[in-house]
Length: 84
Image 1 (tube, rainbow, N blue to C red):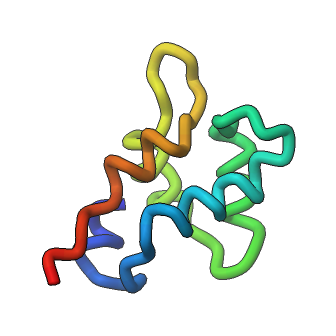
Image 2: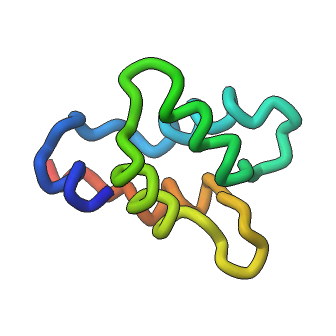
């Protein structure tokens, strides 16, 4: 994930839009996604992530105690305020 961010492959997206995107995937409105669920979405839909990209992202996104992705926490870690 850090490589993707450093390569500037995707333009920055506001935090609220990222949360909305995760909420679309979270159909039961639980506030979290299973790693397998997110992997399925990101490797089989749209512009698919590679296995390496998924592994790097999941290493940062998955709560090690619960083995879930609490996406609001993940998004807040992955976004930065625009200094301009």
